[in-house]
Amino acid sequence: MKSPNVVNIDLYVFFRSLLEQWKCVAAVAVITAILIPVALSLKDNRDAKSEADNLVGLASLSDEEKLDRLSESQREKVVYALNQARLIEAQENYDANSLVAAMDEGNLPVLHYSWVVSGTSDTVAVSAAYRLLLEAPETSDVVRTALAPSCQDIEDVYVDELINVESNDAVDMYVILPEGTDVEALKTGIDERIKDIQKSLEAEFGKHEVHLISSEEAFVTDADRIAERILTDDNLKTLKNNYDSLRQAMSDEQLTILDIMLTGSSDVQPYVDPGISFSAGRAAIGFGVGLILYIFCYFVFFVFSSKMRSSAVLSETYGIRELGTTSKYTFKGLVFFAHCMLIYKAFRKDTVDGKSLDAIADAINTSVKHNDCSKVLFVRAGISKNYYDLADKLVSKIKKSGAQVKCIDILPKDSDIADHDSVVVCAGYAQTKYSDISAIASVCDHYGKKIIGGVWFD
Image (cartoon, rainbow, N blue to C red):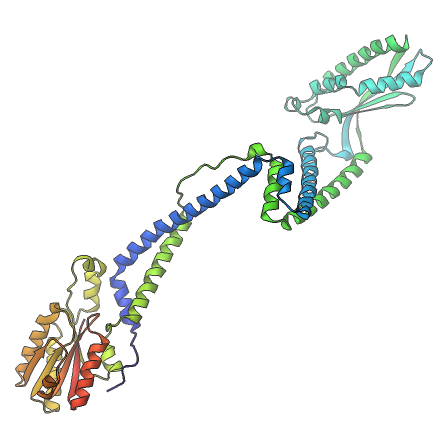
């Protein structure tokens, strides 16, 4: 008799049993496919609410109060990053809205006007006055009306930069011409504008003449703008790199305060619960978790169960010869749902419903004769009453061989063992305890009685 100090784990039986329970596996997987997305959604909502409440609380504070929540070194970094961000934003806004920025500085189309002032003793002062008035908002209005319809609503600063006026010996005016500019309307407007300026300046400087020297369209290269653009692009790249480095080195609290100060408190909205949200990805994760969880829990139960779950336990753990297996589907109620009948019978097609009883009886009878036994004790060790009919049929087949057979349902007493020559053990899947077989083996060893084999009721 082997020492029963090892629990036998039959992986084939484990996976076969698991396959029978596919309905339970699927049910658990579906439940977790629902519960896990719900749990994750609730967690996301809780985190979002906490974050939103924190932002609303911060937004209600003044900028100084926001910064007071930080240490001095942290506050300095936030203020510095804030200035950097605003410089970047200003430059990006200019690049996005400026008409000139979108044009090629190396080949700018311009309208060039040149006037000469005469009939006055102070030509330099009068020319300078013309320059100042040509740079006034009224001139920008003239230029705006000549621009393409899509440019009519741009900010004044982007119209002003289209105009450049110089005054030396003559008054030179350059107007950059964005695509779609009505040049003729612009010329008419400038002609009217110069007349209005002349009238206004005669009141201050007296009677004088202003002569148009030239009025032409041309293409020019603005070297100053090109150099400025190169420098601006380099500075912007450096600013962005510095700003990104600053953000990466900041704590979550610093970043939150910085972002609120940049976007403004009005952009911070109170939390609105979006409700439970599902996603295919999270449902798939939940389904997978359900499968793994069920398999793991069932494996732990399978390993640590005190009841036998494989016929191999008889031979491998206790050294008892396996005389055969007989099967019968006996599940009812909820257990019926947990064990698929079709799969159960597919794996036991040769043993189900008494098909193997004759072969088992022949093995027992042969063993009885070989061991010259006349009295056989048939021990139904913990098997379910649902299998008693199979056990009774087996006993009747053994009796036909002439042997005396006694069938008991409880662990044998000393007197039971002493009165018989040999023992046949009946063990059942998830029914018979390891301790039951150990107890039977112990009594048989003590009285020197042979266990001629075991029958497995599956």
